[in-house]
Length: 408
Image (cartoon, rainbow, N blue to C red; front, side, top):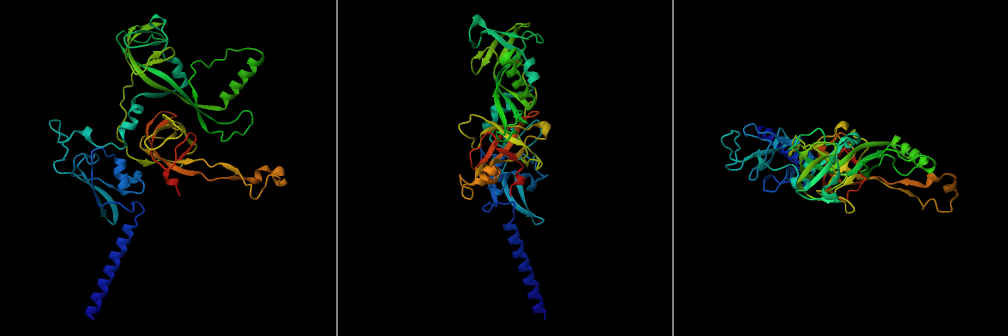
């Protein structure tokens, strides 16, 4: 009788153990080929490490186990060991410092400089976009001082030459400024004022920068053209002007025009470039990956850096949402290729009278196709920059962006 009871208890324990093992093995968060341990290597990123353990790397914060016994448990260094453990029946990623890797926060000594901590994403891919570009409003762009001429009437200027600037009044001699090259004007069409349906009217576009948009033409055809521009502006949401830093100057003489001397340039400076004070606040180099708000609507890819027919992994793209829309660094977004509308030529042939009576009857909306994922790393009011972290299809301008939680 006692043996039978013991056998039943043993059987129950075995079944429970097998059940737990099955559940843990099939945990929806974990990648099927995840390791039990991983030693952090130089050149790794937080995203790379998370991708080794998880089906979706942006879920990293959900299973990260903070170890209060380790100084700076949120920073990870080469030589550290990431272990997968189960705490309370749930998977957790635990940090174990490698031998001699303890980081001391005392100002007198550090076993490992904080700057050596591995980044969330490859900083080399986003470095220039953390410091060089700015997105400003149209009004801000118009108020900026601009280069009206260069020394000896040259078309372009090099280091050491004087440059003449309009609007250079609120500065002091010796002050350092940056030179900004106008890039794109980002906007999105909210409606078609002429009533034509030319695709999705919300699709954002990037137009060449035009400093002066004031109407100067009068009468006849010019008046009609001005009406077109006015209608266009009424039905367009202006997102911002993209300006790219290309050099630095030092103020020689304030005024209108004022005089500056080129100190450093990446490309030759020429008429129409803008000037501004350097930005003071450094941008964060570490981000906590997390899903964008599932309620995010109307987000699209605005432009792709160095676009050669589509963005791939680790390529930067701009999107038409920013701080004012609730977008923040670290947010991960799923990228979808918008589905086309095609004709059902199988059921409705070209001579089918039903296509004449009801043209929409033969149209078929192809579903959107998953293209990859991107993570936001810098935000402005209505525009943000993100990095493609995964691409199974080339990312293109106009692709839809949504929360990865919306992926079915």
